[in-house]
Image (cartoon, rainbow, N blue to C red; front, side):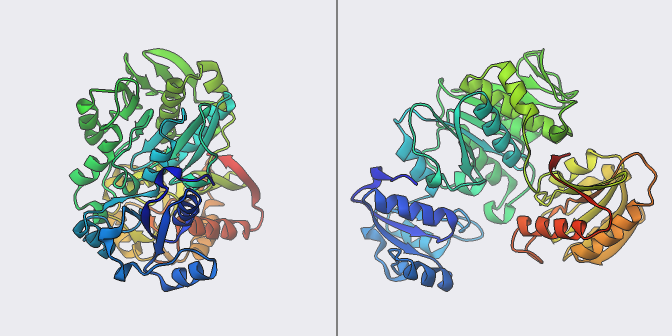
Length: 462
């Protein structure tokens, strides 16, 4: 933890006592701010009091006396309606920001550089890959934000530091001063519309990544979907690096055939890198390559870093093998677009899907149904998914992950194809049965490891 000294002698309300909020409170207090901490969760407030946090009931606080409200990114800012704390701040003329905004203000002028990554899918893998590549190339790169550590738990800044941050739309919405040295937009598909209202609003928030950049900064933007192309067309100040895995680019970074090319020149062949398998990982690799180049790494160092990338848990993670069957934990695939990337990476998939459905269901996956040898459905979305799959795919209503793993594993064991996958790639949020996607992925792992004859392969990435 390092101190948020630029907020010294200011009165700051912090709403939200989860991981990032707790780190922020420590940083603000250490920096000399007067902090008023609160949460809607009574148990969190009680724990905060027990741990000596500066708890203050914001429901009865005069917000006009505050200098800022720092809001947890999970708390509604605008949709479906502003949280009561936001309404009070607005009425009192108090700015509403997030911990990542406090962080950006604190590191300004330190010489540290930032690589900020956003998008609907792929941002976690890209963040981890970019950080790994930069570290392997000799840079003091530190990963945090929406992945891994809260930003104020990262090492303090200096002129050698590169912060590689995953930023969600929720976080960007609370970052009016966002100005990354390298900003990356991976892709945009419908997601979080309950929070942003419309797809246009969602895209507009993501576009703020580049709004304050100037000619010394770099914007890396995919041009493979219409929303991103429109944002790229509006970028004028920073250096724009177009990115595509659909089309070979003469000017930009592309990997249409699995080979990263820069301005038409081949740089890194991804074919032999098992942990960057699939077109979605080609996009992740293109973005990480563009980021590392913008920071100053050379092509050879980037290639070495990609070859040694260990991957991420719950993202196309091979957790076990049994004969020709590979068991893959892709619990992070919380929407149809992410699940589609996983399905496309294998010819025959025994697919475990379901949970709490998001906008659009799985209709968009119809072209990939030919890859599905069987669908083993769980959770709230099971019936709707079964209706969409119809008679195009064998469907088994399993309700829970352990039942789905047992049935899918048994069926896959009788498949004589060279390679088949039993894959948890839910295309849904986890909240009907699990607190988060990580707990869901751990349940899948436990069920797989309970099958006879499975060899654990933790850390190997498909």
